[in-house]
Amino acid sequence: MLCACSGEQFKFEDAPRSPESLATRDFSASGLSSRTGDWESKFEDTQVDEAESTLRDALSLNYEEARALLGRLEYQRGNFDAAFQVFHGIDIRGLTPRMTKAIVERTWQRKPRTKGDIISTQEMSMHSVSLLLEAILLKAKSLDELGRTREAANECKTILDTVESALPNGMPEGIGEDCKLQEMFHKALELLPKLWTKAGCLDESIAAYRRALVRPWNLDPRRLASVQKDLAAILLYGGVETSLPPQLQVWGATTPKNNIEEAILLLFILMRKVASREIDWDPEIMDHLAYALTISGQFEFLAEYVEQALPGVYNRAERWYFLALCYSAAGQNEATLNLLKKVSGCSEAKHKPHLPSFLLGAKLCSQDPKHAHEGINFARKVISSHDQTKHFMGETHKFLGICYGNAARACVLDSERVALQTDSLNSLNQASLIGHKDPELIFSLALENAVQRNLDAAFSNAIMYSDMVAGSSGRGWKLLALVVSAEQRFKDAETIVDLALDEAGRIDQLELLRLKAVLQIAQEQPKQAIETYRILLALIQAQREFQAKKFHSEVCINTIQFRVYCFKQFH
Image 1: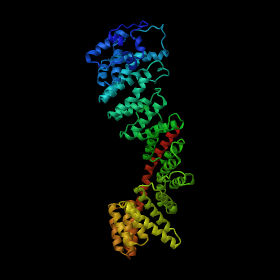
Image 2: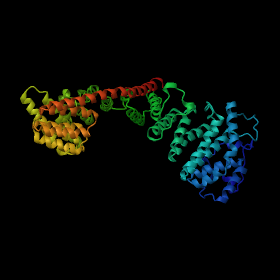
Image 3: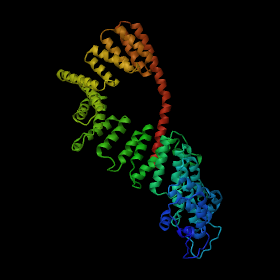
Image 4: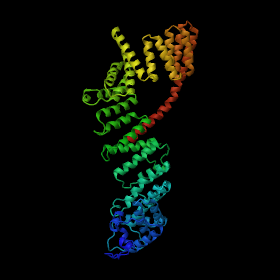
């Protein structure tokens, strides 16, 4: 090329066998630059035709191939506008039938031509096809660099349309051994959905991802997994609901019905590949799967996949904590506590304390009085560590105070009960100094003061809690009414219950009506109490009818769980 452009004589070692024979050589930009030296001047518009003509005459390239090589050089230099102008001169639409025919004939032959084969001057070689596909791909990338992303996606789509029309059943084995057709096509498969996503066309992006997965295109495991992961991500977070087209609904009852189910299926497949070591561990896959199963309520399945993670992915404390979160979300608190006890066991004594596990253990124990002493141990381990933040310290003192109070109510000895009650109030007051804007803390403080008959403090805290939740908590109203009734102010307590009935939900109304009836009996008003009980019974009957209707929705949830199970078993 240097000889041709500089005017020196260029001699071929062998005579060209066809007008396209030299197009089968891979003229990389590095090869050109090594023979041309420093070619620093940029092509002007008038020079493109001159250089193109020189290439055609000296190297026996046709018009399109010469432009493809020049465009590649401009692209690699970063001259995207110049590269686009060069590529734009190639009549891709007119060449598409010849490219398709060449690919079809190549798949029929399935073997490279020998020197004795006669090549028609109208027949396009596979290297010429590869060169032109590369030109289309670089044209799309140039348009993307110029900010014309939608046009870039349409150009990239041309590659897929051309190859798919020639290979409707997928890419045959061995077709990429002597040309770049497969490589260019794979790059286009990966680029197209990203261009559509960048252009904001998420429907087209999802369709492009599915298009890359429905046929065997000989993608290597890493590339295939990347496409599957990206599709799962856009299905989960794209905000566009796109059901599978009818031609892809081939799995009967286990066919995904929405984006979430399709994403879960893809992620199950990826996790199986990770387990079989077909692909490397990718934390993003587990992150996507955790999100998908969480919003679907399938926490047990998530726990199973956490357990299947290969050794070394998580350390033991992290694995147990992850599993504990799964089982806690599934309502299996006993299993959760057993896992958290392992984190605080002797096997982890030499490791750095895992504070989130201890804090979760203290929280769960604070919700169940029979685990009060275990919760105290969890909370003390957090406090004894000097690594916790101010927020963690406040939460820990809150849970510790609740556990102390629960333990005190289960004590037999008065001296032990008094000591625990004192510790409970001290811990809760300490927590209030750190996180005084926490409604749950204020409620716990009001309840503990009420239990210990500190009625003034309990009333003040109950009022504060009601103000913080804007009167929307039924348990807050109930606690306030109980505190007032403890002062023998039954009429005021009944008035509070009446106010609460206007604000409370259906479940809270039952408790409040029962409390109202008790207060009316305490005021020696049996007729009013009987009427209140009649209203209570009517609400209970209505609730039973509502539960019967709710059974249908539970059946639907079980159907979703069955589908997830089928995905896991059969895919």
